[in-house]
Length: 177
Ligand SMILES: [Zn+2]
Ligand SMILES: [Zn+2]
Image (tube, rainbow, N blue to C red; front, top):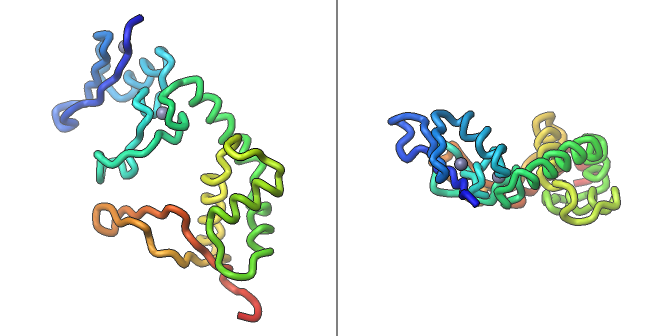
């Protein structure tokens, strides 16, 4: 069996050419993505199962690819894409708002995600509940309904890129406090 290990350009300034172990010429990011999909690999991480945490800033800092759940495989990527779409349909802004409304003090992302998962009767690991809930909490934050209390866990590239592991928020107008 031919191995299709795709290697990104070593020095991006010299061109955007990827190489694959099978010898296929991959002159652009797009052709590398197509080749990854054709050979059963995730088209986001190109089969490496890793993705940069802060692309363009700290390329050597990576985490498990979120598109394929760290497997590097196309099949998992497709399954996970469907799971993301399902989570988006199931977990709406009002679901998250209701959970937040029932909490008096400050709350962590993980607490809201657990409450949403329990409320919808979802098994752990079946749907990407955490990322979806985080997106919706950030929307509530943008509209001023909640305020973020956490300081970032890590600062990357100065203060341009920050990382939060399990951020904490509080409702903007909590009665009686
Ligand atoms: Zn190949
Ligand atoms: Zn991937």
